[in-house]
Length: 175
View 1 (cartoon, rainbow, N blue to C red):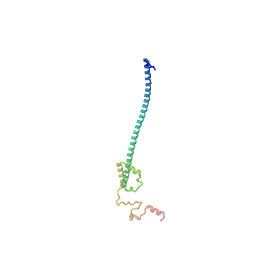
View 2: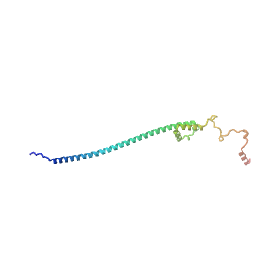
View 3: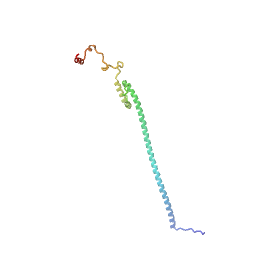
View 4: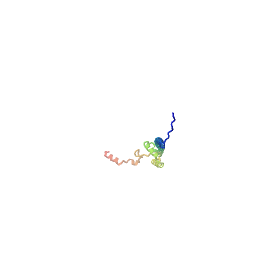
């Protein structure tokens, strides 16, 4: 087989071949750039979404932590009020022993209110309960007699006299 002579290209043909190859390669590279740009945009969107979710989760965690701290503080305050209420009920019973046996007076609502009072306000209340109890009776605690439970002994000089009402009734009854 005879050897072929190498073909010689004209300048225009050479430029046309190079331009054709550059156009094909440029088109392929442009397609790859477009694909990579789309993937990059998609990944950036996913990153933005993930970072937004992270910020939201951090905010939710901080909110939950604050709520938990508030709850713990409120529970501690409730326990303190309950302890104060118990102590203050005992103090009121001591200040006014007459109330000690009155179970209806010492309601949970009233005890809770006393437990929530400031110390100066409770001290004022306790003083009022102490004043209501009054001084201790001089006769050792015996109640004085009243008209309902009996009357003091009558003077013999006035005992024979009857009241005007009794005299009137006796006169009407004819006797």
